[in-house]
Image 1: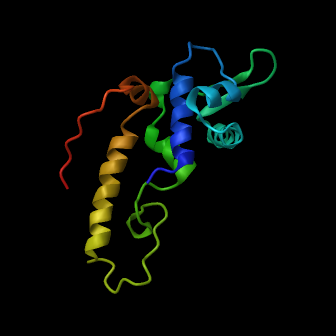
Image 2: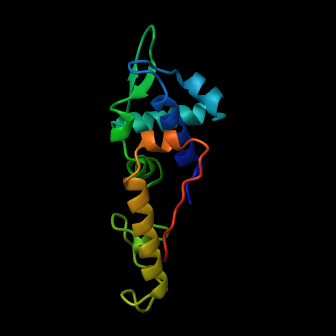
Image 3: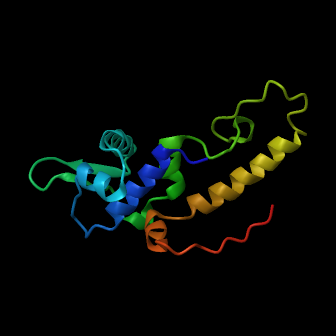
Length: 148
């Protein structure tokens, strides 16, 4: 499940993606526009900056902006930066794999195999969606037709 940190981060990225080229937004503006606690948002923006997804500008006209075009920023990458692996359980993760202590048959575990499919579908969708595509989706509910 996406945490509030991940959700707020995506809202902040969509906000920044909506700015005219070269313009910045201050964290207070982003927080107020998206109903995000400012202190929490400041920490999120810091993580996105360290990851190279956004950059900050100091001084007059300062604030935050995307580090590259919104169409070049993967939603999946942003979520991983803020929330960690996309796998719903650790034994289904590529990057943070941990076997379950209660599982006698890791290779044949039906729960793990299903959750790997969930991970694969999620990562396929999120890694192939840019922040710009997410922003443009706006209030439209995309038609998703995956079968598990």
